[in-house]
Length: 312
Image (cartoon, rainbow, N blue to C red; front, top):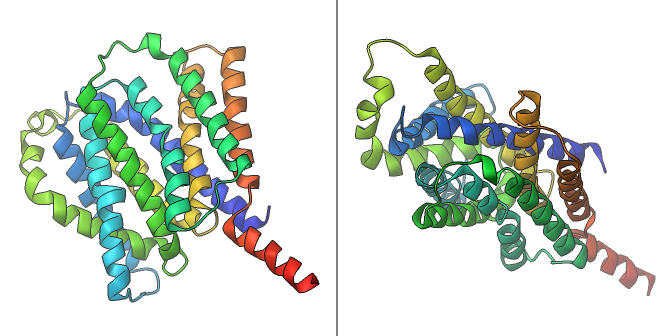
């Protein structure tokens, strides 16, 4: 594996660590401290401002009209609908259900990448995704007994659709990452998503309990800042940088690292204990990710065919 691919793996790993921490933090905020609509628009508008400020310090890139249209679709799939549906769904269902449903994303990406990008679904890639699903779901089910929140069909459907349209974003944005910088893509995506969602959500900010108290709650403010900066701005900056270096299916496979990371954090802070079963589940995930990274891409297959033709 060359250094650029290694960098891509490291970037998406960091993004998923932040996403893993975000789930319990967001669940803490919803709905006691913030309305789902308020948190959604706060994430989008904060990231929008941050990316436009950051763009002042990087080289300017002109985006073609055709690519601007693709960025608009990516904005709705990767930010607007994705974040909104996920937060609304998480608000009415259990974190365990949300985590299990999230394991479907690599399957969606593998199928969409085959249809849109003509990436092959090899046996090694399919087996890798299956192993990842097995490891992630088994680990999540171990912690299911500790969740006292009820499931919700509507919430689960929202999170399922959120995962599907996020998969569309990963696949559609891959070609754009080869043409534009992460900052250029994100400043337009978050601008489009903020403008699309703002009229329907702005009123919920003032109505949220967090902004109606006379005394500041620093734990509450810290959680909000983490969600806005650590779980939105930073990972959305890293995802296109990773997509530039590795395939969409590989990027999506790191979703399986989220329950592993969450479990590891729980062990560190004394909320859970280490077990052989957890180690086995983690091994399934890591082997699955490795198999997907080692599977042949369309470029690899085309290169092999070209070499065979040249020999003839």
